[in-house]
Image 1 (tube, rainbow, N blue to C red):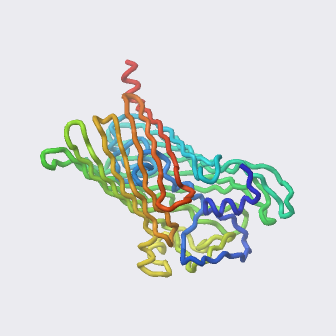
Image 2 (tube, rainbow, N blue to C red; image 1 turned 90 degrees about the horizontal axis):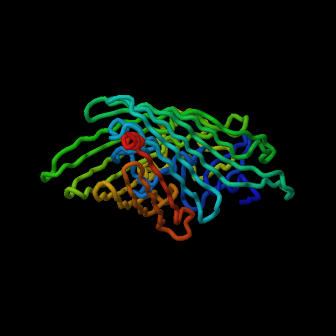
Length: 388
């Protein structure tokens, strides 16, 4: 895919800002929207099909191989000793055909209390042709971003666990090209996640049920910049909080309901103006930005509440082999207006599982329409047992 202006494409499609330290150009909103923009927003895209089919709910779902993104503390309760999964998502396919997200994740249980995990997320923005103001071609580039992380999970009690993860992030949007006369380079930084998970098995009407709750503070780390100037962008630091309830309908049928609430721990712009070159709120430190994000909205508590997104999902399993899923995601109109339904299915065999999800937005002509996700998972512990 060829685009005449990388800066415009990136801003419109991804909300990523390429900064100029002394720029004063601003684009003022006339819709009353006051969205929060950050660097490397690809970190917030749901990478797997299971949660992607449940309205992006996942922080308190039952543990699986993809727990690294949603809540790595869940690995303490995972049943298998070792597993890996690969997910693929064509992104914004309604607009372009060569943007995609790939996600590789795995875990290994060390003993009854400790588990280690790792994941690699790669986001390709396709092929872009840089053009000068006079229309001359400056060269082709293949912008991309990736994040690699490792996690450690420990069981803290029979029903409670905690985890930490360390992440390296690299974002190369320009290939070193000059943008508006400013020399650019790939941005890189480090971040960390801190997560906790609780689950308890109970009997309800003589049937086994599981209630669970989780919290994940993710992408807490240094700012990122694409120039040598002082202006830098916040990472998409998040606080995910969720609950779930799973119950047996009978011997062969189970159903799970999950609910997540998510808030960016990033300062709210103090006006409805969007500075497309310098980055909003970048003068604050990371720690100050996190704490102020709960009380800095110009509209007060009402606007703070609008900054929370909500995910609601349901999952049905038959004989632990076939799954049907559905969900709904809600974001306030003034904060991005993402509202969509999701659906999906899964098939689990002895060694591998295959899942897919489909996104259906509420509004027409939405660039997220018809988004598909595919996930292939392998239970390496079951594979080793079969070979014996």
